[in-house]
Image (cartoon, rainbow, N blue to C red; front, side, top):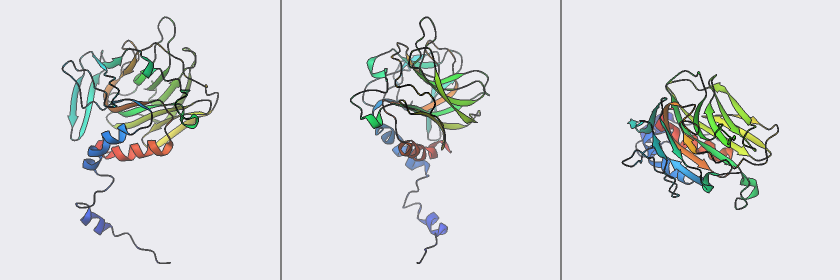
Length: 266
């Protein structure tokens, strides 16, 4: 058997003609198309398109524009575009609607694919001290209206929370910490009655204990950068945020990370 040695010098010389996978310009060109190809996509908010009111447009094709709250600013750094949230009233929201009430049991989704996946790229300005919600449909005032939430908890770990009755929670929490001033690919996935999983970049953590069969049909708003009502606000940046009415495979989530990470210098 003849083994051919990888010629790193030749790879470097040809990189101007044959693009590398880890190449920021290629990732920037393909990021939105990759996100829009996600199965069961319900919303995709890259934070690159917004209107005269500051409302963030949904590029999934389903028109789920997010309302601007507070005074966040849209900005970019190199090829990274994002919304910058200052932790004092800044977040995006959308009033409850059927398309956001993802239960994980939708009959029009094949049984093996049923569930929920949500995530995006996030950057925290501050050391962890209190819970900060990245994406959620989650309210605790009056009658409990918890459904799903992806957040950084007070000790710095990433967490996915799911409720099947609006009050009680089942969670999965990372071991790794979300430190300040760095971009992270943060994703949570719910597979009914089977498992919950949370990713930070290429690392993942799983919970398979007492996983509910479905998610509560909550009347809470969908929010980015807070939970409903503007509580437990995030201080930092959000980009390429998405929501899917399916449990995306490990391979899809890994591909999404690797296809976009060069933009964020990860």
